[in-house]
Image 1 (cartoon, rainbow, N blue to C red):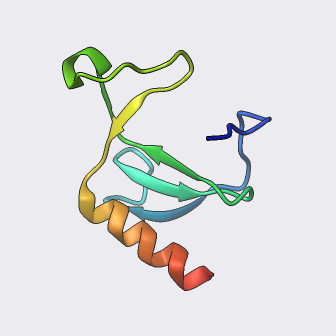
Image 2 (cartoon, rainbow, N blue to C red; image 1 turned 30 degrees about the vertical axis):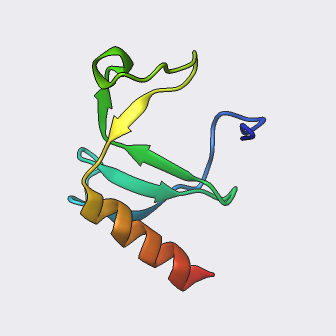
Length: 76
């Protein structure tokens, strides 16, 4: 897996979310053909997963992820 050279994406657009204000789980598309996920941070130890420095586990509702995937497919 590769990591972006610049950790800050610009020009975010909402692909799917539960609210329009950006204060709830949301999937954003970037101008770099990547996605940014806003959700609830999950502790790796509690999930039984080792999370490397610089990464986090994030939980979002499945319906939001599926809606974002549909929108990404429509844009292709």
